[in-house]
Image (tube, rainbow, N blue to C red; front, side, top):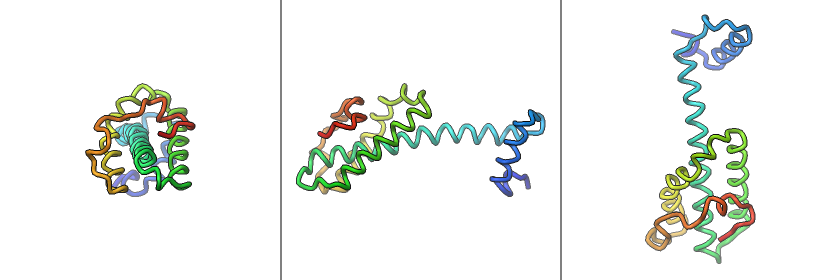
Amino acid sequence: MSLYEQDYCAWVTQHINLLKLKQLTQMDIKNLIEELDDMGAHQHHALLNRLRILLAHLLKWQYQARYRSRSWNATIFEQRVQIEELLERSPSLQSTLLAKIEKSYPKALKLAAKETGIHVSVFPSDCPYSHQEILDENFYP
């Protein structure tokens, strides 16, 4: 059994040291490639997840005005902060933002419907907010 399978943290530490020492021939390249690929996929997934939650809360804010709360406001704020930080850490995600909004909106729609009890058909079938509005800390529909 390899170190990668036995103790992931020890494997990471070992590979950091191997990189620092430029001992590339001793590295577990196959698993390193897999881990780097997973790291990139994680950033994309995190953006999709944050957008889904943010969009659902924007819909709830718009369609259930009488239930607006500090909690909803805080969730909207927090998701925007997290998205901004993701985009700062990984600026290349910016080029995928519109596609990620389109991809996350249907799930946000289902989430908003589930949380509000409002039928999905009441909400717009396409995202009603521009990407600028979605990320604008002063925008509340």
